[in-house]
Length: 479
Image (cartoon, rainbow, N blue to C red; front, side, top):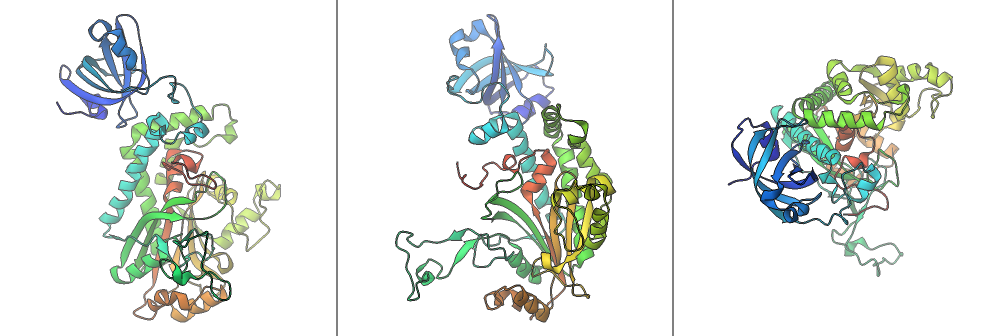
């Protein structure tokens, strides 16, 4: 008999039919006549109840079917006699695949803190919360590829090891095969990178954007979806040292085309989650309500399903950075000193608190901000005619702030070189990037979506370390 996943057994209406299921025991209870075993195989948030006759299987075997143990069960599907489930499996054969010492197993049938579970990341997939997050994460990965495939985009794998810094921030992890106990030096005392594997300094990528632009100059519409790395010593609930980025680049797109695509993309992903992850989202919504039940009304998060529908049901508001600054400068929180970072005027770098105010309190809709001062944006963004602002756009969401950042790219060779020199970007090392502006240049645009930021929004989790299987943060590279 072939194994049937528990999600399929729970959907089945074939009572009287025998099924083989395999999974892990969540809980076991019962009396001297019958044991009720809650079993889960990761395919659904819901457990399958196994009903086992004590006389048939013996107390010794059933004692081994404790929390954490893995079982194979053959049984007949029956309508459930109890509450909480529609069907149950009347066991005819039980095999203990793997025993679990209940005295050592850390995931006992009780509530565990998220901090504790991060220390048990090798086991946390067995919990309801993290199995739900994993299934939603998978659905979102599939939806990303589905969206771009339906629109005719080409997926490009950009380098993970690179010699360029796309952001110009310098917060990069170095890659080397040099002997750190005996580093070769030049005559002037500098590290002799000619002895290194690539013959030059290299790092883990912070973005696939620049290489994505190269591909878009021949394929028109491309996207990358890969790991990126930031050596930023930040221990916040919103930062990781290793995370995944989705970065489309489109030839012949201006800033308006870019905004249209970003809005369509986000709505597609959220609609996919609502249509395909209902059970997991309902569980995560209830988890969030329980977590915040003791908070004051004005401190509670928006209900998860309501928040997702909030994005779907509203057109995104579009306004310039200058307009946003005026709104923020004249807002009550700013005038009453309630912002941690007060807005004094033009040129301020907007923080999450400002972005959330615009979305949640002022417009009560998702917002796209455009035309930022050039001083606070990257070198590759196209300058507007007044030479003070760039054609950038940030998409702002409730409870999370910026979820997408993008721009129209500068396609003019001379303007791009001048901007690079102004920002101390090494022009000679970026010859390959500049050549795309010499040979058949075209207007083009793109954006980046941090996948874990999206996962925070879709799952309602409060810490980015809980939406990636094995988080990498300062002083933490376990598992």
